[in-house]
Length: 307
Image 1 (cartoon, rainbow, N blue to C red):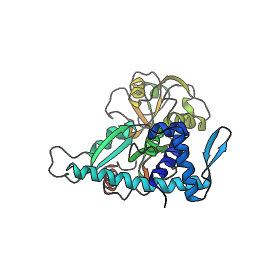
Image 2: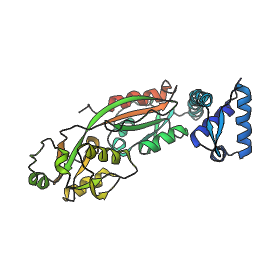
Image 3: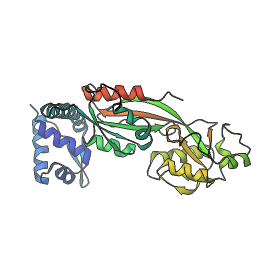
Image 4: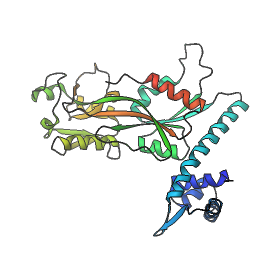
């Protein structure tokens, strides 16, 4: 019989990458972590870890056991959360990590309407704002139960090991610039933009550590040029505000656009479309938990129509 505590140590090692980081996360000593992992290998009769240089890496058998462990631990965490809520007379709790534009436009709908009756059976939702990489890392560390992430048609995002995903919706990416800039380039209001025509433009780019930055680089690269940035900011609202001052042009997903009636801003579809796909990612086996299932279904209801 496999011991849950040892499975937890293995799962933490898979998430943290080193014995020292695993020990710190579990409030253990390094030797204690090593002993637990060695005992798990004896229990399974398999080599779960192997040395590569000075580091330890999971073997194929180790990764397979991690995948199973994540399911077991996910169910246990959900059960513990529900039991705590029952003892306190509270509802279940679902922790969600989401990137900024979807957190602003979609996630508020997970909370009940304060002016409407009902909603007592819905789980309590806790939200933390994270870009997709950080959201998936928090999911792997069991800090959240759901990660709302995105990928681009130019930049597919692999599904993390030990996870499942529900696709929520797709949205187009637009070229945003000042109307006077568009007129100078012969681009009529609302007309589709050819990115190649903006090779010499000043560009407003997302933060260099984001998938959105890589999307912009790839879109421009596919059009035959490397964008020349005059501003870099992780908040699309900043890029749109700069575009409205005619500081440059930017690529912005639909959800991140400001009020369509905002002055000084032209929004144009792309002649060669780029799309952003939004997903809900959760640990394998946890999608059937009542609270998680409720939030997943509610996210599907709240998702804007694909444009």
